[in-house]
Image (tube, rainbow, N blue to C red):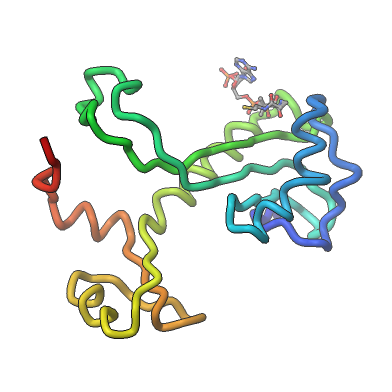
Length: 162
Ligand SMILES: CC(C)(COP(=O)(O)OP(=O)(O)OC[C@H]1O[C@@H](n2cnc3c(N)ncnc32)[C@H](O)[C@@H]1OP(=O)(O)O)[C@@H](O)C(=O)NCCC(=O)NCCS
C-alpha cells in the first residue's frame, strides 16, 4: 500500500528521477534542510518505506490580493496567506498512470486538514482555546484549528482596513 510520509534520512533520494533535474536536485539536496529550517515540508509517496515513487512540498506563503482574478473576491489591497504547493513530482517509471493526480489530491487533502497553528504565549493559551483551538501533543502552547472549524464560524472580513 502507498504511504504518504514526511521525508526522512531513511528514504532513498538518490534513486528518484522524475525527468526534471531541478526537481531531482531539490529532493536530494535541499528538501531536508528546508524542513529543518521550517521553510517547507516535503512528503514522499513510498510503498516499502525506502523507495520514493513521488513527492510534494508544502510551505506557507502569501500572495498579493491584486494578482487574483476579480471573481475570487479577495481584497486587492492585502496580501493573502496561502499554502504553497511548491513542488510535486512523480518518478518517471510511473508517469502517465494516474499517480500524479493521486499525489496532487493527497497534497490538497493535507491542506484542508489543519488550517492554522499558533505558538501561543503561556498566558494566551486559554484565549485561543476559547475560540476552538486544540493543543498539539508536543507542546500545550502549540494549538491548532482545523479548516472545518473555521468554516463553521462563518467569518466575514470585518478585519479589513481601508
Ligand atoms: C507532471 C507530473 C506530476 C504528472 O504526473 P503523472 O503521474 O504523469 O500524471 P497522471 O498520469 O496522474 O495524469 C493525470 C491527468 O493529467 C494529464 N497530464 C499529465 N501531465 C500533464 C501535463 N504535463 N500537461 C497536461 N496534462 C497532463 C494526463 O493526461 C491525465 O489526464 P487524463 O486523466 O485526462 O488522462 C509528472 O509527469 C512529473 O513528475 N513530471 C516531472 C516533474 C514536473 O514537471 N512536475 C511539476 C512541477 S510544477
